[in-house]
Amino acid sequence: MRGTPASIATALTALLLLSVLSSMAVPASLRSAPLTAPSAEGRSTSAEVFLTGGGSTTHGELSGVIAASDNGFVVGGDVNSSAPSLVFGPHTYIPSSPFTNGNDFFLASLNVNGAWDYVVGADHTQGGITFMSDVDAHAGNAVVAGYMYGPVDFGPFPLSTAVQFDGFIAQADATGNWMWAKGFQTLPNSTTDSSIPQAIAIDAMGDVIVTGYFSGETDFGGTTINVSNAEMFVAKLDGTNGALKWVISGGGIGDQTATDVGVDAAGNIYVSGVTQNNIRFGTNSYNVVGTQDSFVLKLSSSGAVLSLTGYGIANQAFLLSSLAVDNNGDLYVGGSFEGTFAKNGWSITANKGGTDLFFIKEGSTPSNQWAATGGSNAADGLQGMDVSSRGEVIFTSFYLDGTFSAGTKSTTGTSSPWAQTIDADAMVGGLTNTGGWSWLDVTASSAL
Image 1 (cartoon, helix red, strand yellow):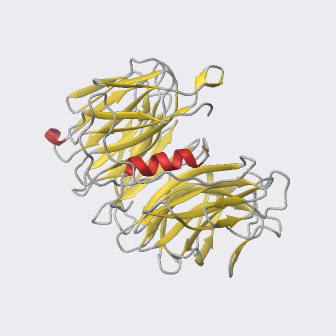
Image 2 (cartoon, rainbow, N blue to C red; image 1 turned 120 degrees about the vertical axis):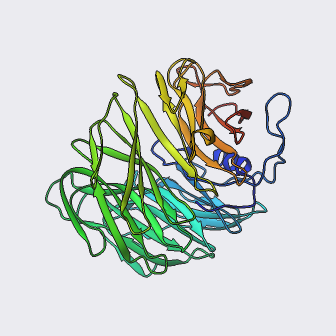
Image 3 (cartoon, rainbow, N blue to C red; image 1 turned 90 degrees about the vertical axis):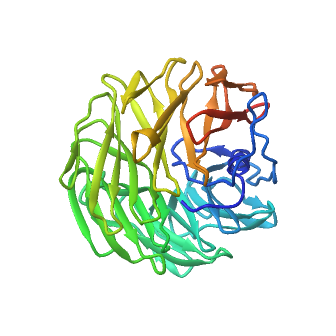
């Protein structure tokens, strides 16, 4: 996703303080300005620019994703219809789903000074429900993707579904007015048929890349694909009006889940995903080796399959949940894993207890590659990561339990036990451009 002159650590912390994060949220990507040197205890010395928040009085909101915009950040999430309203500074959004415990998505914009520019959603009053998947921004406009049930109006752009859930993508301008909205249409041949966008990215031309999974017969906007088993899709939409430019699909027996998507300066597209079965995209295939494997699919700007790279450990789980691409076109991936993973002369081992975090730089040459790992004595999970213009990795992880250690750095959760002695804190951290651990920090809370 696109870069921003503001600090990613501040942006991620602001998101954490906004609300409780949805466990299903797909992490969004940010870039940071160059980081300052870490302090002796391993905490970042980057100055805090602002601290802000927003939400409802009933705690019915779930903030899930954040992305950099040209003048700040866009934040997306969900709100339960039982909440009377969402308040972000001077702006208020009233949920409109008529269902008891229904769900509305929301989109909010925050400028670099920490002031809220707008909060917006859609009209669900005719019987709609929506769920947020991801957001991104380009040239002052914000794009949101998710899935919906029933009729939902995005200003002058009405959408509706014929099945339980179908995907939507919509773009708002700098003041929160909807510019266009598009919905996928799946035929109601089966009660389980649907289309679910999971991640989006915007390329340098402003076109929108969306990926997720679908089952059955789905019209993506002029191109219909029919599958008997659930498969992944990758589609490109015209950023000016949402028209479909192309769509491809692939997968195998069983389910495949998209976890992230990114675009390099040349327009090449990188999609990460998770599978428990062998997969194929075009003529490229990957055979799984573990209980849960991951992969990165690389496409050209026109949708041609360029490569399919798998990640797996025999009898273990390897979850690649986030990716990023730097200014040189080098790919970075991160997630959680068990066991020992080896590649190109290096290896990493999860030995802290449960699953540990990993970060890998897939440079163009072996000398430009590295891997790093860290963890606590519990099951650690990566929620989001990106890479700065200097090749430094910044990440966030939630529900930190006990002490997280990596390299010579460590940090300990500070909240009171939330459930079953879990310290429900959130962690942010950074790695150098050579894979060394530079800083770690946690949020402080008396509860969640």
